[in-house]
Every structure is written in C-alpha cells, then in structure tokens.
Length: 266
View 1 (cartoon, rainbow, N blue to C red):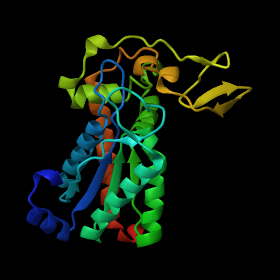
View 2: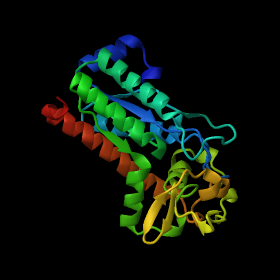
View 3: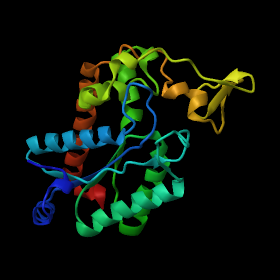
C-alpha cells in the first residue's frame, strides 16, 4: 500500500483519512554531514516515517506521510555551501501552518511529527503548544537523532563513532540511502576548535568549572568539515537498520496508542 500523500490521488487520501488514517509530518534539514553522508537528512526522516506507516499497516492500521520539510532551523550550520536554513520564526510558522493545514483537512486525524534535525526542536515545540492552545490537539513529536543517541549508548556501541558526521545519521544513511554514502571518505575527525583558548566541548557549549557555557558556535568550530565524531569508521548499515527499525516501530507504537486512547489527543 502506498503511504506517501504526494504519490496518491486526492480522493484516495480523503477516503483513507475519513476511515481513520493517521498523518505523519517528516522534518529535517539540508546541511553538512561531512564528506561521506548526503546533506539531506530530511530524506532519512521521510524514509523512517514511511517505515513507521508500513509497520502500522501490518497491525491493520493506516498512516499517510506528508512531504517532508527539508530545511532546518538556522543554527550552527548557517552559511554552509549549498545548505538552506530558516530563521527560527520562519520555521516555527512553517511547521505550525503545515500542521494546521493537515488538521483542517482531517480534524479528527492523529498527527505525528518525525524530526531529523536538532535545530528544529524548539520550533516544533512551539508549534505543538500552539496546536494545543488553538485546537485542543495534543500531537507528539519524535526527535530521531536525540533518541537514537540514547539507543546507541544503551546498546554499547563505540562512543568514538557517535557525533555529527558519524552515528547515528551515518549508519542510518548507509542502510536507507546506500547509493548516496561514500564509505571510503570516512576518516577520523580533526577535533573541535578552540575559543577563549579552550576547545569547544559540544555544539554551542564550552565546558569550564564543571559547567557548560552556551556559546554561538559555528559548525567548523565544533565539527570541522562537518565531522564531530572522533572516528566513525565503525559505522555500518546493519546498525543503521537496527536504529531505523527501532525508531519506526516506536513511531508506529505512538500512533497505535493514540488510536486506542483517543482521549490523549483531545
């Protein structure tokens, strides 16, 4: 069964929504992920959303996947050649208008955001709160890479391979988009640059005196060449498949929960 709204005819979409199909809005960004992975991580969010819809279909349920939002919030990746980033206000407005449009066309449908970019989280949270305040709709969001990082830690995967330009995105891309990944280009990272004479400890942070100080860092200060991971050469498609499956099944479980407990979304 086809789940992508863009590939379906309008009468079929309307009929499936009237019959109780859920709606998934994928989001991501177009940014650098280093020399090995494609810039469009929104493609991974779309693919995981489609996998979630397929998992839901096995349960006798249905979900439709909207075209993904391909542009992330303007943060550390502003100015990357070929990248497009939106201001927080623009991304918040775009996300909210997409969700309101989906809700307007199918007021009773379950809505879920599947997000593949950390810079989108604040805008998504604002849109979620606005949807509840305006329409009484409680809609969840799954922030893929934040949750995947927790899974990787729980599974005991090498910490050196985790970070921007490495896992989880790199392994998931190897699984879902193998034709776009260049494994031969994977190399150890150069490490972060220094600010105030001390290496930046993470995106937007410098650790000093036992605490993190927030700083307006740029990607090349934290992840030179788009690579923050110490050594991502252990990334592989098998791990990516495991991650994608876990995330897709979690999304499907959330939508099933909403179907079986409609008061949660009221």
